[in-house]
Image (cartoon, rainbow, N blue to C red; front, side, top):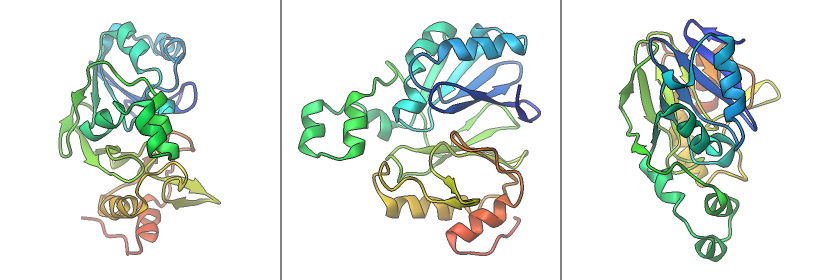
Length: 225
């Protein structure tokens, strides 16, 4: 069992890690690849909670290692699914359109089964949990990539907006990101947040020098608001 801060758990699923905000009701952030429902159920059993206590599933972006399991988990829990409209729209791309604009992300969009009925997840929305989870729209990796920020806990959950290479923060994958200039602008925005802990889907949690690392990546100097 991995609890990052009280009430926030890192849960290994198929293809990536997800995060559970465990309070009176539960929020799941990302859903792994298809087949991840069994792993989530097992983790909930370990912490003494039930699938039906999961109230919402927040999708950080529309790549299959983050939303492949969303349909089965939504069916298992009855949870509401939330996704930024830009990524929900991207997932409607047909194979014909993907082949016409042949890029890695168009192929991913065409083969990924997204949520059936996702509620729009808008920039600035505040979700329950961890004193308020703020939605920060951070396009670049995908058009609708979002991060979740707990101001009171100084925790940032970044999906794939950042990666770690050689012990340093880096922009997202060049191969699978749609617009690197937008990605850099999103990193500038993140660098202005007061962050002590960064949570990644594919890397270990960053607990030391988070503000300094973000500031260095953005080319600025860290300041605590």
